[in-house]
Image 1 (cartoon, rainbow, N blue to C red):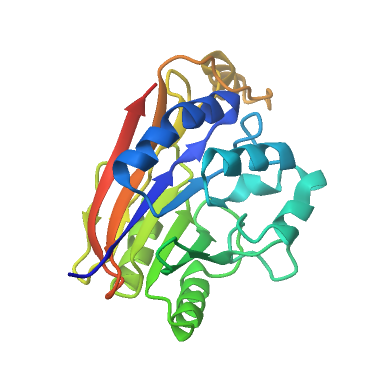
Image 2 (image 1 turned 180 degrees about the vertical axis):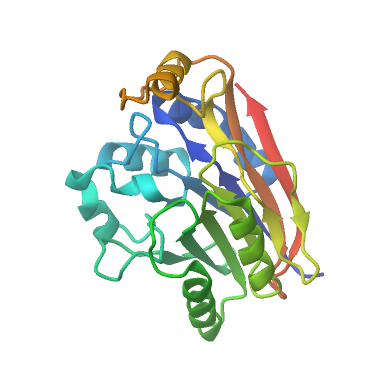
Length: 265
């Protein structure tokens, strides 16, 4: 019987309350799911926007193996060195090569299985960076040359169509593609025809009585007055850990199952 590889993905962690819920729930979740790899999107982990050394260290100590990012990973320029020096902190691969950091890494499980992790960002309604389709194809090809069958992608994108299209483009070549960025979990977890697990958006980890993790009154004021009022993370009410749990066949690298996660503290 082929060995199964189990990946636990934690959706966008929002500020201090998001960190608290991860600290509270992750140990039992890892044990219950027997996770081989824990990936978390941490681009909003520092007070709701960006990442810094202290926050990254805390995430790793909690048991997260790889931190992925997105458009907010650039919010704290002081900590760009993190992106250059830590192999397990990713920024979207398809930013220009001159940008700090890197967009792929390889994680080796306790069972000696190597898993490739790729972080990408969409272009629809976001920045006109390099093509995520071409960048993904090149990165997957390089990982395959190294003998890596299990490949996980965090695709940080606004448009659902772009996420769905990329998943179909890579179906059968990667193990799983999970979307992030909107902070609203979708209900379309599935295995695509050629064996790739897919979820349009994993949601967010933090206060859900909010506007995508932020204080509701501030968000309403921004929409009504069209002024750049500073967003603040919402109060710790209705705290949820969102994410996805994926089981992969080690030999083929194809997914056997995907499960959405919505856990309350």
